[in-house]
Amino acid sequence: MRSIKSLILLSFVFGVVTLNSCKKDKKDEDNTPLATISASVDGTATNFNTGAIAAQVSINGANFTSLEGTAENKTSMSIIISGTPVAGKTYSNGASNDEDKPLLAYFVSDDERYFSDDNDQTNPASLTITSVTSTTVKGTFKGNLVYLTGANGTTKKKAITNGKFNLTLTKQ
Image (tube, rainbow, N blue to C red; front, side, top):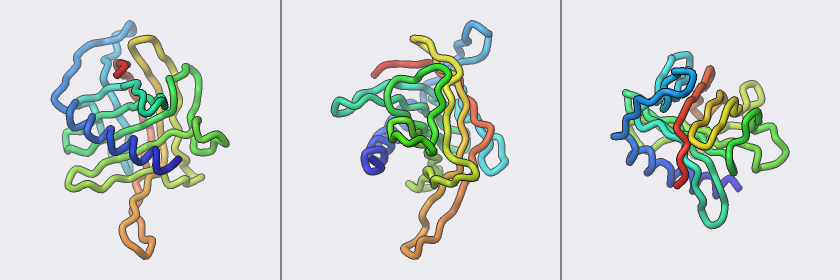
C-alpha cells in the first residue's frame, strides 16, 4: 500500500507544478477565500495558496482525493486520502484500515526531496474534513513528517501543525 501511495504522490507532484500558475480569488458562502492551505512548518506559518486545489481522481479503478498547493518559497504541501471526502470524518495514521490513513508530504523547493509521514505517535498524521459540498472542501491537518537522509537511517524531520484548508473541489 505504501508503494502505491508513493506512486500516487509522485504523480501529484506533476499536478502541483502544473497548477502553480492558477490563481483563484473566489470566496465561499461565509465570505472565506477559497483556494487556501496554511500550516505551521516547524513553527513557521506558511501559506500554500499558489495553485491550491482539491482534486478527486481515479487511478486504475482506485479513487483518491488530493489536496495540494505551493508556497511563495516554492515548497509545497500535498495530502492524499482514499475515496471521496466525508464531512466530519478524521483520517489518521492511527486507523486500522489503510483506506482511512492520509498521506501527507512536504516538498522542499531546492531539490526533489520530500518529507512524508513518519508514523510518529506524538503527532500522528491526521486530516479532518469539517465541511464538504459538491464544489468545496474544508478541514484541518497535522503530523510529523520525515525524510531519510542516508543509508544508515539518518533522518530529518518536519512538524506540521495548525494546518487548515478551504479549497475548490474538482473531479479529474
